[in-house]
Length: 95
Image (cartoon, rainbow, N blue to C red; front, side, top):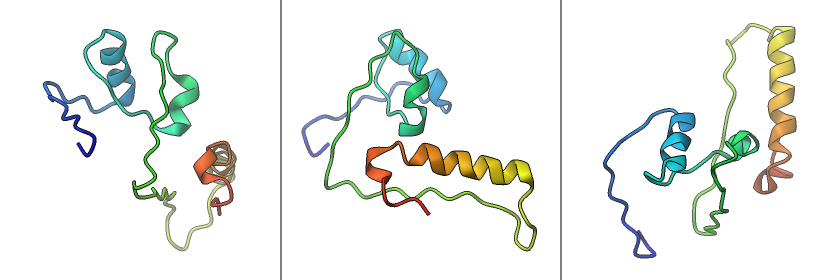
């Protein structure tokens, strides 16, 4: 809106995969999480959105308090950390 664009929202779609279907059909635009960018369908084009004034985004993985994560959960957390390192803005910020 700062740049004079005010979207007209006619439909609200919860799942980002469904949103991509709307985009592919020419019915709108959507934002795609960086971790999902690798799996975008071939009939959709991704354009980078750069807004230095936008706040950063923190993402957390929740586990049960007092319970050691299972081997599968530890492997999943490792995969998330590895994937996050491939996001340019996240480099150096992954803990």
